[in-house]
View 1: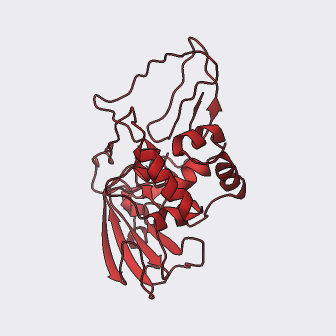
View 2: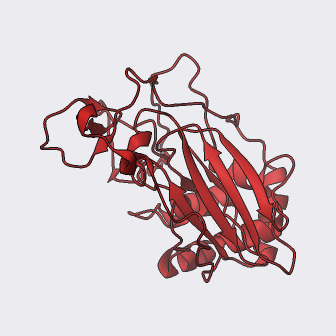
Length: 276
């Protein structure tokens, strides 16, 4: 059985499954017999990111306080999972894949959300007639306004990407304002299509342990970098990943997985959750 963030299907002999490059997946053998599969990947060096390894087996380790807040579980559970994982020899190597936007084919291509409008289809957006482009297509106001950090993780992201500035289409760049309350955090996450540079304007990070708020701005090398918040992708997926799979992967009690899946995880304003 393999699950992505949009489907859950069973596969038997001679059946084929397709897993898009932006999705997360897992395989589990449900029968009492061995199984063999062959996988073809659209890269000469596809690599793999095993979520359990990245979260609990990273070197240096992610601070347990960060994981406790991100996954909304007791700190002792995180400490126990760290200990158990360190004693397991994992078969898959953990590494990172790299992706980026394609090179632009013109100076600018102001995005249109109206798919019925005749134009050039580039980078997932139709282009406005260059003669109709104006200054408003390259402008955004709002970065001076603090975001609401009254949520379980104590942070808020204000994105400035192609949906906010249509003129960014094909230019391969975006920006975000990130507000942190005291002791707030931005949950462990990845951007599947971008490299990120972060500038701390106020406060102190990596984990805002101070008694004051913090403010940072992030620049990303994509007009639509996407974001995958690991806790939401693993425990908050729809449909849910089988609790038995997560129990075995994270080496924790099954009731903990069921409790977090049923109660739901953090809901914060995402930086372009649409990663299609």
